[in-house]
Image (cartoon, rainbow, N blue to C red; front, side, top):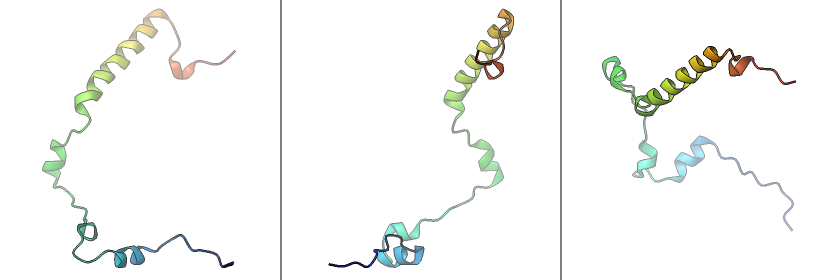
Length: 76
């Protein structure tokens, strides 16, 4: 019976050495876009604008009814 502990954690070098050099996983890089391109990126605009409008509408309705904002309510 083997009583020696098993090391389940690998270093980054071990993982990189595991894959052959021609494997696409070993060539993943991070590329930073230029400021002009970053300004064009709006990944959440398509669905957040509708939800933000709904939240603002609900907040205005709560204010008109005299209710406290959700984050200021206390439990009895």
